[in-house]
Length: 428
Image (cartoon, rainbow, N blue to C red; front, side, top):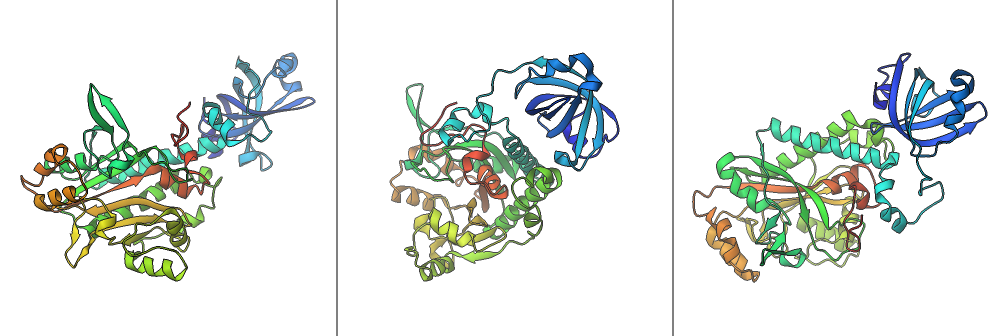
C-alpha cells in the first residue's frame, strides 16, 4: 500500500503497488479505461486494459466519478501522463459505486459551488490549497518551537473587546452578555508573565459587514507575545516566522504550489523585508490621486495599490495613534504615532500581520479606554498585568487565510478555508 505522493516523488517506480482512493475522472476508450485516482495526497493516472483484466473489465464500466476503489498495478514513468507517472493496473476491487456526481464539467456559479462546498472540497485545487495550508501551519509551529515559544490555548469566549466593539459577535452566556474572540492577544499577554514567549493558533471572529474578496467572519489566527521585546525586534520575529513558513511550503508543497504560481517568485524573497513609514505611504497615495488624509487607516484600495508595487512582503511602520488600538505604545519621539507595523503581502494582497509594542503604563491604558468610550470593569484583569511586574513587551497576529490567499495567488479568500463564513453564508 502506497500513497500517490510517493509515486509522484519517484519513490516506487517500476514497483508493484496497491492504491486506495476515489475516481476524480474516468474515460472509456474501447479496450482501455483511463482513471484519474485521488487519495488525499495527490492524483495519478491509472490505466486498466481489457486484455489484462479479462471478463471483469465490464464491472468498471458501471463506475461514476467519485466512486471508491482499490487498484493494484505497476508504476511506470511516462511523460505523457499527468504528473509524469502512470499505474498500469492488474487487479481492482470496487468499494462503492457513487451516484451521479452533481458537480460536472459544466460551469457552476459561486452560489451553487458554495452550497455544495462539502463536495467541491474534493477537487484537486482545494486539496492542494489545504495541503499548502497544512505546511504553512507546520512551518509556523516549527519556527516557534525552535525559537523558544510555548503554545498556549486561550479562550474564544470573552467579556471584553480587543479590536473594537463594532465588529463583535455577541452571544448569551448563561444569561450574561459575552463575545466571540476577535483576538487572543490580551490573554497571551497574561501568559508571558509565567511562560515568557508564547503563541497560539485559534479561530477569531469579526462581525464586519463587508462583502470584499479579502474578508472572512471566521478565520484562523496565528498570534504571539514576547516579553522584553520592543517593536524593532518584534518585526524581526515576524519576518523570520513568515520567511520560514514560505520556505516550508516550498520544501514540502512545491508541486501543489505550481498549480497556482511559479514557485520561483517565492524563492526570490529574502530577509530582511523592506520597511516604509506610514507618512511616506500617505504621500505616495496622495500623489497618485488617492483620497487618503494623514490620520486615516488604510483601506483595501490603498493597500492594493501600495502592495502591488512590491515583490516581497514589507512593513508599514508608525501609524497614527487615533487609527490604532488602545493597547499600542505611544512613540516616544512623536506622541501622535504608535510603535506598530503592519506586514503587507506583495502583488496587491495587502495586510497579513498587525503587530505592535504594547503600552506598559496602567494609567495610560485606562485613559485610552475612557477616550474610546469603553467600560473599564471588563478590563480590570488586563490592567492588573501592568500593576504587578509590568515589563516591555510586543506581539502580533497573522491571519493564516490571508497568508495562503497571497502565496497561492487566489482570487478570493474564501478559497483558503474549507467552509467559509462570510456575511451572507454559514451553510454548510
